[in-house]
Image (tube, chains in turn yellow, green):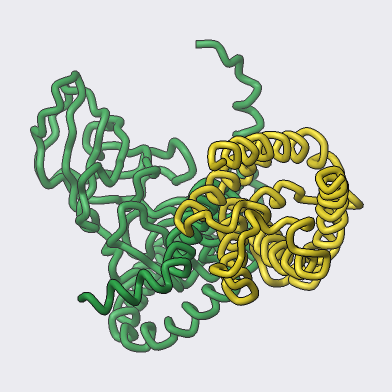
Amino acid sequence: MSSRIIFINIFRWIVLLFVQIFLLRNLNYYNLSTPFLYILFILVLPFRTPNFLLFLIAFGTGLTMDAFYDTLGVHTSACVALAFVRILFISVSVNRDAFDEPEPSLGNMGFKWFTLYAVLCTLVHHIVVFLLEAFKFNEIAYTLGRALLSVVFTMFVVLLVELIFHNRKSN
Amino acid sequence: MRNLWIFISRYNAFFFFIIFFSVGIILTLKNNAYHRSVTLNSTNAVVGSAYERLNVLKRYLNLGQVNDSLAMENAKLKTQLLSLQNVDTSHAIKVNDTVNRQQYTLFAAKVIKNSISMRNNYITINRGSADGIVKDMAVISPQKGVVGFVQDVSEHLATIRSLLNKNTAISIFIKKNNAFGSLVWGDGNFDFRKAYIKEIPNHFKVNVGDTVITSGVGSFPKGIEVGKVSKTGISTGDSFMTLEISLFNDFSTLQYVYVIKDRLAIEQKALETQLPNEQ
């Protein structure tokens, strides 16, 4: 059981990073909006992942992204922030003891919960990414605008992917 | 102690977040040239203006000393002026002497930030590109001695890579025998009154007390007095000797500097790039 989960997650990591690096990296709407689908991997890690492991995975994933985006540290910080928001949100909204779903995916948690969860996490991640990338406050409106538009794009792709796989599983 | 552990383990997510996030930020700052330059550049507006304000006070405290040095310099200049006026001025014919047209122009600039205690020290001055300062100009101190080179220039400010910096080397002569060497602050040296001269061939005789002047190679004009030899015979093991010199200027009380504009610098550079690059 547990080795199956580990295998699924490793497989998911490889596929999502592959798609991100070789396909989505080239998708860019007037330099305003870019999707970062790879954060879906951190979003749907199992509930029972220990905090330290979660941070370590987020750190490693971010580092890998940075290696391909040539922005060492930016995605790493953003992924760590995302992991923190994930822990906070789950501890507030889910009672861990009376709950036996393995992971916070769309199929397990329902559309409303998952959308709120994903939007919050994505928002934090994108704001950190774009602020760190710009690294100055005098174009803050433009930077935040880019972050928000990217959140829309990312959420669209994330929900698309989740809906496709959710349907296939339940059938 | 036990309570502390309970506190930390209860909010472990937060502490993990702090640790990992700081590592991420440090990675960003260390590895990206753009982020580093934005963070460290003290010529940016905020830091620059803050230092300028702080310096008003410092300048006031050092006023007496500065006055003395200005008076001394005035006296020196007046002496020179007198000797110039005594040179035959009665000629009515004017010669347009383009050969001796002044090659070097000096800009006076106020030091608004100075450091002497780091391994690599930088100075910020209140003149910038608007005043005609460009990168790599030579900088000297008002009385005697060299200061360094212009590193970065913004519109109204500029940073100077001072002599007290790993990356600064200035070409110099020993005044009495024109032995050619290079002046560096030296590894492991943290005394702002001392510097070292390297690459002087062993066969030259150098004594303690000999004066060191700039050689005129590079951005500095020839003949600016730099310091006096304070120690000879430092063994390096190769065919060059190392000398220790005591600098004439005191970096810790630097208030004003002169930036030297070399009229021929661009021309020289353009000409020298045409040389065949084969060695």
